[in-house]
Structures are given as structure tokens and as C-alpha cells.
Amino acid sequence: MKKFWKWKNQAQTETTPAQRTLYLNGTIAEESWFDDDVTPQLFKEELNSGSGDITVWINSPGGDCVAAAQIYNMLIDYKGDVTVKIDGIAASAASVIAMAGTKVLMSPVSMMMIHNPMTIAMGDKAEMEKAIEMLSEVKESIMNAYEIKTGLSRAKISHLMDAETWMNANKAMELGFIDDVLSREEVSDDDSQPAVPVMFSETAVMNSLMGKIAEKCRINARPAQPDKPQGRSVTELREQLNTIKKFI
Image (tube, rainbow, N blue to C red; front, top):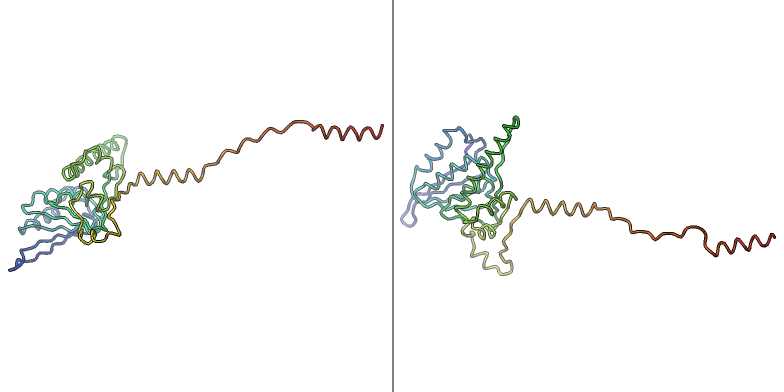
């Protein structure tokens, strides 16, 4: 399996303490960790091969939820403090790993995305029902991580996941998914560009788009036309009568 993580360790000096940095880039496990004893053990051994606080940089679109769950648990159990820094994107399973941080920070230009778990299933009705039940349980487990970190109600978290919600740093901090924004001093110095919380919901955007399409395609009913008088007008009858009189 191709490793999606990389360690960078800096030895202690007279002026600085030892630093351990973990980089999580790209897809979280190109192959599932389900029924894999080797890869999770390798990650755990590298994690516990040193001591002291850890900084975890995340830039990942997500991936295998089993791998994310195990990494989350390993970071939660780690003896030192874990500072998570999101410098690009923490989407899907990667957002779950981010919740393990003792402190979670985002770059002012990064994004976080949460959504419902997905899978591929094949089989008869019974197999489809098993897949649906499994996805429901996976969602509940993911919600546990979000609930512990944010303090939001499970109903609120479920709604955000249903809508496939994208958050910028300020919105993520407002909702409790992160603790602070990286380089916040530089951001606050620029009064001309206030920090605005932004949250993107795929469901809301699709509903808005469909509404606009429906508005464009709508055929307005023709206005009712006034009933035209039936027969001939009095003037026409008088002209015809005068014409007849000329021949009498």
C-alpha cells in the first residue's frame, strides 16, 4: 500500500524542544484498511516510536472511513498533545481525523467538508438493506467524533452531513469544528476585508439551481383574450342595406 503519511522529526536543541510533525496528504488509504493488520500497525509503530507533542498537517480529500477511525483513535490515545493544522482541505474521512486534535487550526484559505458515508453494494433486497443499515451505523460513529469536538446536537450534525456541508475556517470555528485560524494576526490587521463565515450546502445549492431552471423553463399562461363579438356590426349591415337599395 502506498503510504499517505510522512513523518518529519527535529531533534531537541539548546533553544528548541524536540518537534515531531506528521503530514497527511492525499487520499487516506488508497486501499481499505478493513481486514488489514499490516498498515494500521505500521502507522501505530511510527506514531509511538517517539515522544513529545505532535503537529499534524492535513491536506486530504478523505478516503477510507475505517482507516480514518483507527488513526483518530491512535491520535486520541497518544500521550502528548496533538495540534492539527489544516493547510488545504480536510474533507470527508480527513475531517474525522482532524477531530482528534488537542487543538485544531485551519488556514484562512482552507476548507473543511463533512458528509454522509458512502459505499458500493451489490446483491438482492436483503443485501441492500444490510448496506443501508451498515451506512447508518457508520454515520453514527462519525457523528460521535464531531459531537465530542463541537458540542453540537446530533440532529444538527446529522443535518450538516445530509447536506454535504463545506465550511471555510471562520464558519468551522463558529460551529466548533476548529479552535482557531492560522495566521489570525495577519487576517485581523486587514480591516478592509472582514472575516466572513461561509458554509456551502450542496443540497441548498442544488435546490436553488433547480428553482432557477424551473423559473426559466416555466411557460406563462396566455392572458385571456376578450370575447370577440359574433356576427356583423351595425355599420356593416347599414352599408349592405344601402347597396341593396341602389338596385331596387
